[in-house]
Length: 441
Image (cartoon, rainbow, N blue to C red):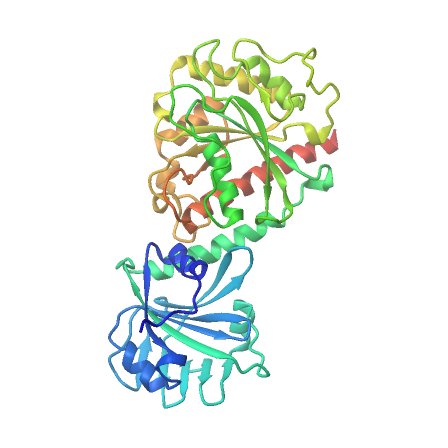
């Protein structure tokens, strides 16, 4: 008879988001194979990377171990190759991780499973008393609370199959997840400068196929916890987007709207009478164009249009323009396209709106981020595509942002999230500069 795991599908997906396209094979389940840690060790030794999941009261947490000793009594786990985790239940399932920074010992006896280092006891699981002791700082970081009044306890151990065999991979990916979560908290906590507006508006402008709509989809995916495709995207030679869309972003499926909106526009074309009409730009920037306005490349909106917003307030205006480019096409912009971009930028400058540039479709996130995930690699900054943006539009290097959208694939990636969230933070800073100047005026 097959043994059924208590881990949900969403829980397993959380491991896949963190560790890549891995699969979990159940080796041990305490309620089936016996509440005996020696039996647990016998079933799990020499199995390679394993995950121990503990279900206690309303908490789900445990430890990932990259390697496992063949010794019957103890195994020694090296730092940076293992981490504690907890699964936080919300509308999706969020994983919290704590990377081990010292060598730890895993001890087994008949009823007790003990994880400790020379100066600290991290976790003790006692099957006979159905009691769990967990270090206070670890308990706080994982956001778990092991109430001794509750005696329900289940323990499962899985072999992790399909994990990348790269030196330092676990350390980097878990640190990336932690940095991603910090960025996510920063974006959630953002408040526009001096509360001049409750929500800022960021306009995405760029050539056809540059990735404007995909960027919105990617941002929404991060806050939904899974890939979404609200904005229609495609690879046609003409713009897929024909309406002006003002998208709000909700924090979770039924969560509150976050304090920023992304405004998606028709793609730019080098030819006149094709793509977004340049004469529409001033009206968009001033907040005169309503959501779902149908663009006409040969006929810009006028005050006589029935939906034209005649008296827009500060909240209706565009507060930041993000010029979006395909990084692989940046070196091949035609003179006509560059002239059109400079014409548009002149309108943006006349309105005093903040500006950033967003380069999409980067091939490898690892090439963009330094090891600390805080800044772009110097080699990346020196690339011709970034230098070209700086030369054409005069945008400072600190505001030329590089991302890889969720245009394909099925799973989330913390490195992609870091680039996208970092880009949003820079846009927020640009908007705050604009709002501060506005207040001084």
